[in-house]
Each structure stands twice: as C-alpha cells, then as structure tokens.
Amino acid sequence: MERLIFATNNPHKLQEVAHILKGLFEVVGMNEAGFIEDIPENELTLEGNAKAKAQFIYSRTLANVFADDTGLEIESLNGEPGVFSARYAGQGKSSEDNLQLVLQKMESVGNRKAQFRTTICLILNNKEYLFEGIIKGIILTKKQGASGFGYDPIFQPDGYSESFAQMPMELKNQISHRGLATKKMVEFLIKGSQ
Ligand code: ITT
Image (tube, rainbow, N blue to C red; front, side, top):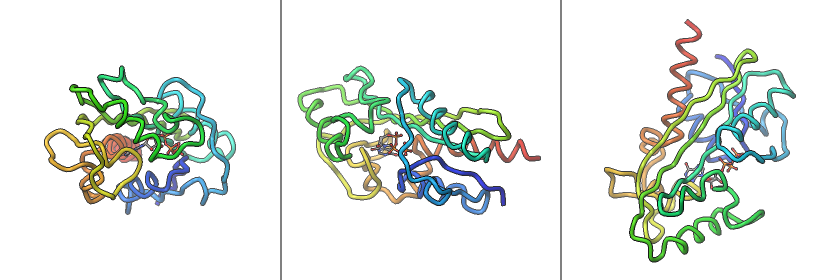
C-alpha cells in the first residue's frame, strides 16, 4: 500500500482522514513520521497555509505528503473566522475559547449562514495538487453534541437537524468539507496510478 504523510498535528483530522483512506493508502501522521514541532501557518489563505504545511514536510522528507487547512466562514461576520479559525480568540487560546467567541459575536445576529471549507494540498512526486471541499449550514445558538472537535457542536449542515458533534464520524465524513476534499484526492490518486 502506498504511504502518504498527513502533515497535521490535529489527531481528530488524522482520525477522520485515516478512516476514509483505510485499505487504500497507508496514512502516517506527523508524529509517526518523526516531527513534533508545529508548522508555522502565516499565510492569509487556506490554500497558502495548506501548501506551506505540505511543503514543510516535503522539503524535509521528499516523501509524498498532503496537508489540510480548514476554515469556518460565517456570512454575517464577513467570512470570519476563516483562515484564522485555529486562533480566532488569540494565540494560545483553546478551541472552546474560539467557539465561545463565535457564539458571542453571533448572539443577536439573524443571518446564521456559514460554511466549512477545506483545502488539501498534495505533493506527489514533486508536483503540487489542490483539492477543495465545502459544506454549507448554519451556526447554532448554543452547543449541541459532544463528538467531533473544534466548531462541530455549533455547526449544523443544511438538510440535517443535528450538529456535526451529534453525528457519528462516518456520517460527518460522508458530507463534510474534509470528507469531500479527501474523496477528490482519493479519486485523483486512484486515477493517476492506473
Ligand atoms: P493542523 O494545522 O495541524 O492540521 P489545526 O487544528 O491547526 O491542525 P487548521 O489550521 O486547519 O487545523 O485550523 C482550523 C481550526 O478550525 C481548527 O483548530 C479546528 O478547531 C477548526 N476545525 C477544523 N476542521 C474542523 C472540523 O471538521 N470541524 C470543526 N472544527 C474544525
């Protein structure tokens, strides 16, 4: 089975993606690949950060690698937290702090439309490829559910009456931003290797 490094320090992302790639590719997280440091994310776009993370590992290993940068884009907050989703409440703050800040900013806001967007950058045989996944939904007024991670308890995808944090991972993976982007990458990898 072909080996791919997933340049992430987020164990939840690794678990979700490893589940999708199970039986197709051997996915190795950054820790397993021997990296313990945080990769700097200084770009102003998801694409830029995804590329930076993948290039960081590629330049040190020359191995096939991919990275995911994800943002929660809220219409009435002009696309915030967006590329700053991981540090919305400030450097060193927790996911819970970030989520609470979103709830606070959305307190008296009527338009609750939002989307999660994931950009994956794959570096394969020294070439870069980008894949995107988007899921539209709404920001709930309070937390619901305890599965998942990050903003999952306050995001309800359109067409569902549960938050991402109330769904089993299999269902989230079927419809999510990350699931869609990962499946596009899988199609590309499978087609490319034929
Ligand atoms: P890596 O950069 O190491 O992959 P990260 O957690 O820093 O991990 P991002 O830079 O993509 O990930 O930051 C996006 C933030 O948005 C992240 O900290 C989560 O809190 C949140 N997030 C990302 N994917 C999510 C998802 O599927 N559901 C809920 N929240 C998510």
